[in-house]
Length: 212
Image (cartoon, rainbow, N blue to C red; front, side, top):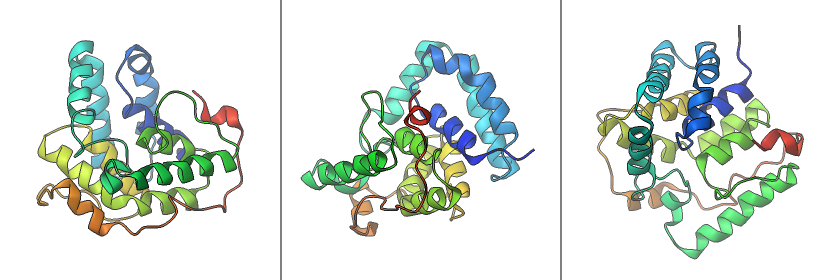
């Protein structure tokens, strides 16, 4: 059975969300999706299932503390993509406005309090788009995904598997456990300034498809 890419992206988006009760309740369903993924290799599937198992069996407070420690303290593994590009500069605000407009142009109104450049939000958006746009967009930010994933590997975090899966979905170079970890500011030199994730080729989907 081949899993539709929209289900895969929604599963990966959920795994990168704060591990509160509703996520823990959904882990069996997320695992069922992961087991049918055909666009990632068996090793990556096993890594994702290991993350799901870890979340399932961890004390809830411990799981939440690990998540905060990884993703909410410091910029090096932030899930807000433009932090890795613009830091706190004003260019980040303009890029986020462009990205939010891209969502609106597709007929999607993000819900919740997360910023437009929050990776789980972007994955929810891409779950409503075609495969070509998904691969192009993930490819555009692959250097960020790879850098964050490599840092997670160095921290021995199972969340690295999510970033490895995203790079495989984009069909680009994957994670490297032996890669040197550059300082965050080095990412600026590798980013080509342009409208954020610009692509208007895919048809819109229903706004309800984007809301949880």
